[in-house]
Length: 270
Image 1 (tube, rainbow, N blue to C red):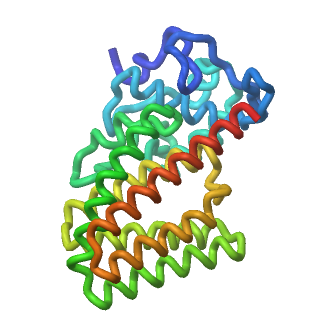
Image 2 (cartoon, one colour):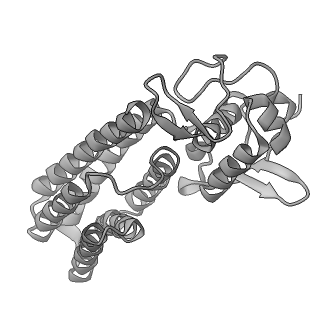
């Protein structure tokens, strides 16, 4: 059986439901049982990833056409095209003009393709596991940074925290996101452990996929808390207090997950 035909057959479930359950987002939007709005292309993006996982497609494998996916998922080609744009931007699907759609050949962390292969950004179980993994990574990165950070690395951490703060104060999501990314990567860099740097970078890349599809990249109501938590991590690293730095990182990830859960519930169920 070729890759494209492996994706045809029984109907696919909506993200987070049992495979084989009825699916089929409306062209413009979909609603939960409570009537909360979700754009159809978000649901379809998650469903396409589930189809890829169920068919066990590998990077470079050809996917069905947009028309075939639309028929398979019970939606329009327009909605599928918007979903494909999201997945292409996230590095999960590659569209080749005149040739069709392919699973993206994204090496991921340390050349291990399986990272991006099994992660479903719309599966809350996967998202929670990713937060668990990030907590372990960033606690150790912060602990090591407290004993190893150079003056230049401390400045980079502080400047990233300030960028994130300015993004929050001016309500500029891209600036906030850039500062947030720079902060966490700068802390990992100060650990002087290249494996931690690669792991932190990859975990954040995967989480960004979940945020883009599930929350459309909004800052959310945790921005002020994140700014204060960044400051606590920086202060502990600057003071050379390894355990305080690790604990501050753990607190930050726990609070981030707590607010992520709240945002997802509010988005899905009102």
